[in-house]
Amino acid sequence: MEPGWIDRSAALPFYAQLKELLLPQLGSVWKVGERLPGEVSLCEQYGVSRTVVRQALDELEGEGRIVRRKGQGTFVAARKVDESLFQSMTGLHEDVAARGSVLVSAVRRLEFAPATADAARELEVEEGSPLLHLERLRYVNDEPWALTSTWLPHQVAPGLLDEDLTRQSLYALLEDKYGVSLDHGRRLVEAVPAAPSVAEALGVDAHDPVLLLRSTAWDQEGRPVEYFTAYHRADRSRFQVHVRRRRRSGAPPSMLVSDSAD
Image 1: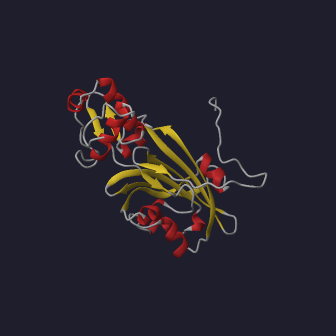
Image 2 (image 1 turned 120 degrees about the horizontal axis):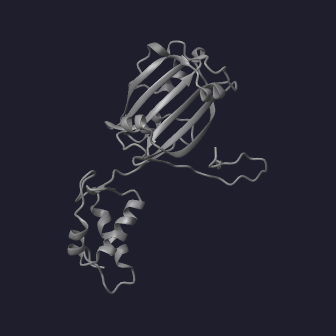
């Protein structure tokens, strides 16, 4: 197929050819956030019908390469970043640093607060008991990425209220300064609609899908030492998981299915 043109003798459908022609231009000819030419312009440029153009754009949108905004047009989407913190005992700070990016946190709350029902259950305390509560809006390369709410027992990090967590890794701080030996954790991820407060913080529209990560961490003595929830922009990140077939019976299920009536 000649570069830049639809090969009308090829077996590959026109929409698939058009998709392949547009792909290398996303991020180069049209930068992230820039608007693509309209459907009519693409029809004229490549000599195809609007049906072909729409099919090609549907494919690109499904792969997260473009974003369509009603009444505004089609824009180049930022590439999603694979995050490994779902599968390993790392924090977002360590995960971002490993990719060579810069993470800065805006600390929105750092105080003692009554334990919510979820935090109390995960940290094995009475609901309403005072816990350290840390809320941060995390920025990757100056862009809002995740809104996290972390709960810890006071004895785990008694001086945490005096720490500057703008650029520090909480996990590194717990291990290096407070002697917490993190050992294992349980993490669940699901897609949820963004509540208005979450949407405002992350710079998305209310009810847009976001990825909600829930995590509980235990130390080497088997004590729960941290519980957090994190809302991640679904248009900026995805979780990468490596799997291995277990040969023994009795393994916990890796997929939990919630009853829609819950």
